[in-house]
Image 1: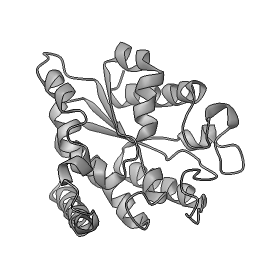
Image 2: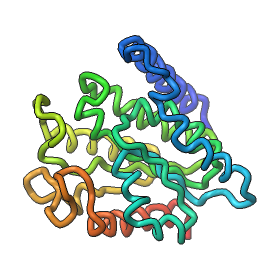
Image 3: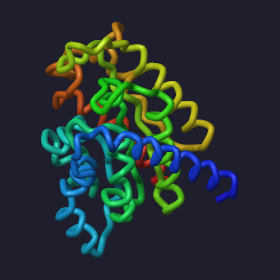
Amino acid sequence: MSERLIDTCMKKYFLALLALAAALPGMAQQDQYKWAGFNRYAQSDAEIKARAVAPVAVFIGNSITEGWVRVRPAFFESNNYVGRGISGQTTPQFLSRFRADVIELRPRVAVIGGGINDMAEKVGTYNADLTFGNICSMAELARINGITPVLTSVLPAALIPWNKELVWNPSWIAEMNARIKAYAAARGIAYVDYYAKMEDGKQGLIAEYTYDGVHVTAAGYAVMEALVQAAIDKALDR
């Protein structure tokens, strides 16, 4: 790997850590380990690390990833995939636990998808540059550790039903997806465009694919599985 790429990675990583450090004082004395969700998968991570065979892929994400494992467990079990989604989490939280929940499991592929909770302002005012930087940092950390990253689009959402006070702008999603796609193309990273296949023409999810405008039904997950499976297979050259 070139010194320039490593330098870029480290700069983005430290910027993300600085942003995280700035956010911590405003968390009302929350335990930072609880905030990041380190305990959520600690036991399962230990069991996986003790196995002779490492996972083929680890999916890190939010409630959409967590729900995927619950609704369609056979997809993960039959392919030796591992889900590491935590409901409500944002990209700085993903980045904080990326080593524990992804790198240390030694997968061949890391599927990185998130951003909707950043936009929904789960942990403060949305900053597109910081969200994008967190996604880039995870991809670069994966590569440095010999893991092939696969980046995914943010799913469409015409509204955020749980935050009535939020002045929602669904175009944030398309803008972020364009940045992720361009970044992936420039660095030879696979990009999975869920948005293009699941958007209803009005910046929302197709009705069949969601039960609340944000979260995904079994039918929606089936679409996602076909897309991400193809990307993983291509990344593994099989």
